Length: 45
Image (cartoon, rainbow, N blue to C red; front, side, top):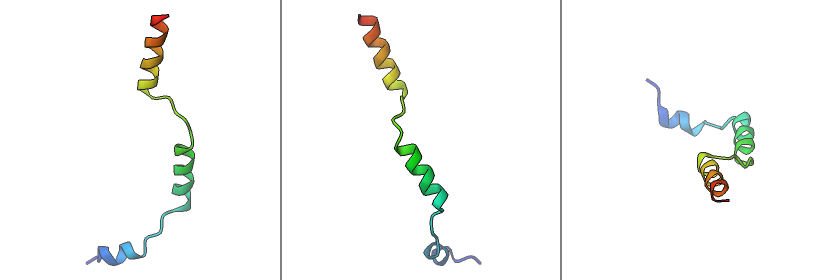
């Protein structure tokens, strides 16, 4: 049987995951709310 608690003690996140998180969170992405707000602004002008 696998002792999950023991296995978790040895867990170390992959460096690739850290790099991916940094790349994702450092970008300023436009979401649907931004798009809708811009459409409303344009329709008012």
